Amino acid sequence: MIERGVEAFNSRDFDGWAAGFDSDAELVPLRSATEGTYRGAVGARQFLTDTCAIFEAFRIEEPRVRRLEGDLFLVSCRAVMRSRGAGVELTQPLENLLEVRAGKLVSWISYGSEEDALTAAAERGSA
Image (cartoon, rainbow, N blue to C red; front, side):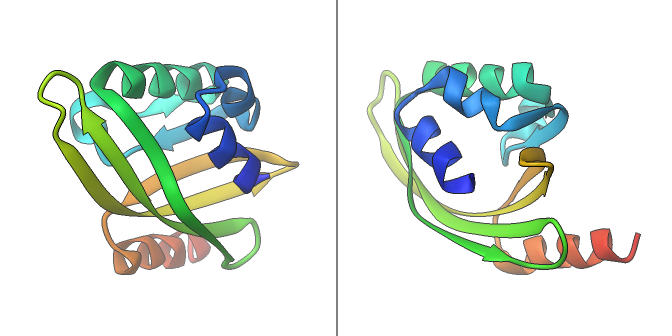
């Protein structure tokens, strides 16, 4: 299910990408400090729309999925992107903490380090 979502994201399959999210899901990308949190399947679609507007090219490479505890997964990957206009290419390692229930994503939060993602996962587990 997670792998299908990555494939849909990389191919700009808006429907396939949004279909993986619960209607109440939260999507918190690294850029959420300036853009806020996206909510539900509609928010997931908007995140992909915004990403396409910002970047001429954006893809997720080498996703590694690791099940943590219960419904939590850690997805480690690289985001490779090229900005619109300037054409600057960047590579950003990402650690994504995902929570899945009933076959849908209910939470997707991106972190800049594995340590931060695992700390967040431990805090969720103790809540």
